[in-house]
Image (cartoon, rainbow, N blue to C red; front, side):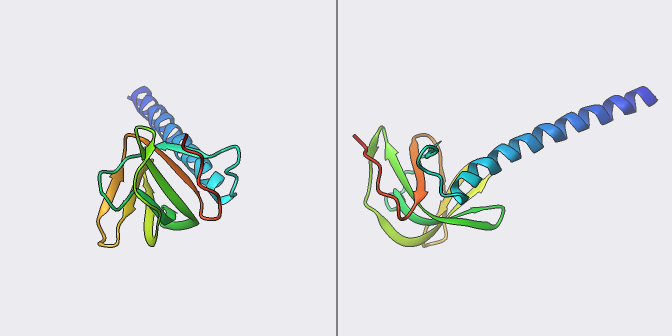
Length: 129
């Protein structure tokens, strides 16, 4: 009986360490944003949205309720940028490593599937060719 409890505690500890490691990696990715280090670490994430007005956002990047940095999200489809730059304030949120944008109507749009850049507003738009 004691051995089974020890094994159970062991597996709980392993699971907790695994979850903690994943959260630390996600926070490290977000620290790149906080440090404005986009030269060598431009964060490329698999993102897509079908919403016609959500291709490029001037956004506030938020993780766990903390506003990290003003950033622009640029979405491309099959390597081709779609839409025009939109400076209206929206929100970008990370939830379990999934990215969402909230449009001006308050609808959350999950972004999955194709390429996206997240960068500070004062950076130049990357060369898409």
